[in-house]
Figure 1: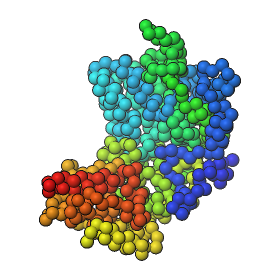
Figure 2: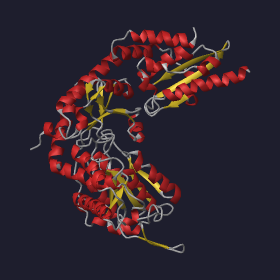
Figure 3: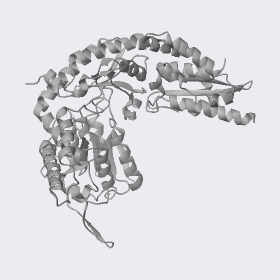
Figure 4: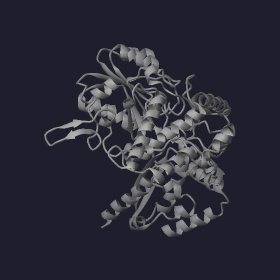
Length: 404
Length: 140
């Protein structure tokens, strides 16, 4: 049974105070909080297993390697990849995207076309612009509407036999829109293009099935789903991962090295040069276990309840406008008060112990679309409560009173 | 008044506030009262881009003293600008170069002058000093 008060006991940070007030943490889309199960697993690793992996003959190294590879298998099972070696450990979503973009620099030629969406985080824009700079490929953009939804009929028009790659986020970090990735994947495949889905914002809320989606690449970060920062995963179909050249050279990723010629290791190690974030990789699995134990259906239901409640309450405030009003969205509310800068609202809320994000959310093209400098973004997780939303609403009312 | 005298005066004023609300309300009111930078100076050349809010600064030399005008798109940032202008404007270049901003800490607004805040204020203070250095060079 889903019981938010019991769940909150797992998160030590939720009982601290900020500026003398109980912390209300609504910056979950930036990073999630860490349950004690994950914190304990980190301490357990360094207390009992710390060693370098994959090459030690001694017991500690064997045990650490086993834990690391068990975690890779947990991640495979969670995303339902066909093979464990299709899961590459990365430092996070940005690393995963750069790895793929770099690989495609060997596969694209001048005037090939690649497609991005108007709803992206800078980390799913800039690596591809760099790819275009070095290959001469052309970047096309799927436009959005006022509700913050991608225009699929416009997407259809962008597709052609020149299209080689399409990359969109599963869920927009700035607005919370859930994009129709099933449609995007199907249409892109129909013209022979590969698809990368940025799952940084989806994985905290839903459990993607990469085989069912038939997606070519899917990237995610542990720290958005109750894990630590500095670790993430790239799923790639075996055939694609074999086609892409290695991203970084170093130890771990080789089969044999001579000064004449080096051969590369098999998947997944081909893409894992150097000593990885071993502890992070292991406890990424712990975080996934934790979230699965609560259950993604229960999480989605409860977060939707919070979203509906907060949307209704916030809209009762005169002069408050919500950006991103798609019917298909997760528990993210981006908003502004009429005539008031988001930075000012965020500053007043912080004084009241309420953590929200303000600014352009690393998605300047979206802000340009709405012709605003930024928004206040409140993003809810399964450990938040309606009482906390009431505190946010009171905080916004106070900010409005002080700033008007 | 010297920069130090003005700073002490501001510290005195802020010591009368009982809580953050009074302090912030005062800053917000200062922000609203701040005479705007002349539109002709609100250009891209004079802009300091923070990630969160923008700041515009213009400087002019008048009778051996530097006069600053400034603006921001966020009102709390503007309130702090008003305080900084009150301290640094109409002072001799050398005094501006030598002055510090520790008083911001004493009036409980330290976090706004943090480099990680990305509101443009840290760069603004640097910019005020750069203007002072430039005018000081001209005086020699």
